[in-house]
Image 1 (spheres, rainbow, N blue to C red):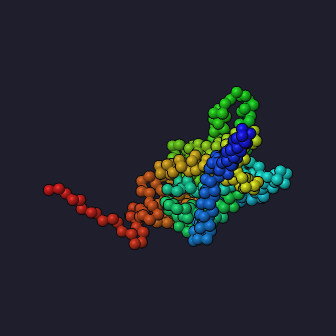
Image 2: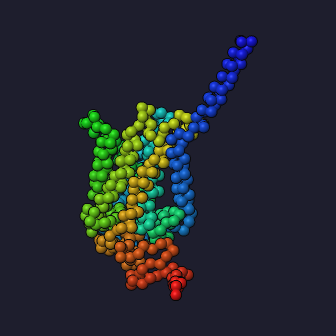
Image 3: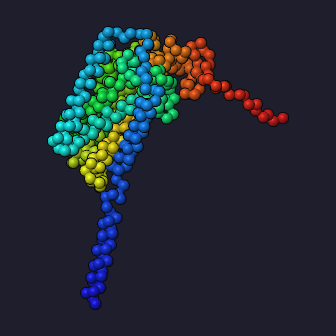
Length: 388
């Protein structure tokens, strides 16, 4: 009888143990990598939705450069730099994606960062969401951009007159942000070798300082003087080369430098298996190797997107709403105006003296008159009930 009772007890114990084991199966756990991957999946789906609307809709139209012809040196540099990126892109794909796959049968962290950084291209024009304060050179080949297809977009955008993206340079160019990230990680390793006792905060501080000055050199001293883009709405008292088409706002270095520093930290601070903080719990993802790797990519993509959106595009909206008047050096060059304002339009360029119009609101023209959209009327004055 005692032996029978012991067997029953053992059976119950094994049953409970099995139930607990079943309840602890990996697919039932909410792990960090699952949360990050869900966010990344939502972001990617949204980007694809907007891009499809853009390509299939009326906004997939070139923004012309206007009557101003860029200087010869500017054309030569822009064409050369675009050619270098186009030629280098397949090489980078082989180096970061194909070669590691052939060697290890998997996509490495750098390979995933390469693709994730390329997809950040979607966020590039979002700094002008509420008000235009940055423009690209429309002499370069473009098909406008997808801004008018983003829900709630406020800044002026019409087919052939909107924020224009130099697609041949920027689409592949964003993937090369990985090279800047790798360089920042090298700086962090050198700092760790130089000061072995430096803590995490110290390393982050060093990479933030490095990325600020790196952005100053790349943007302020190279990309902007060669005429790729401008920040005409920059606060001039906080800008280097203020009043020129290549004025570089110091806060640009802090914003993009912050994004770049975030990417460097994501790549540098990994565990003993080479995994980032967003990949915690990856081993609990069931469904095979392919699903696990796709989950990993979506999580990494979500982190990269968060860095760009939080550290750059959110603060950029404040600066866009508090911009200075555009310099004459920009206003006289039609290829920087993107057809949204200037002499050849009936709209003055953004200025603190003017109200910021919405997509469906009126605007002040060059003569200082209010121009309302067709079919729109000014709101009537409703008399106030006054007590006797």
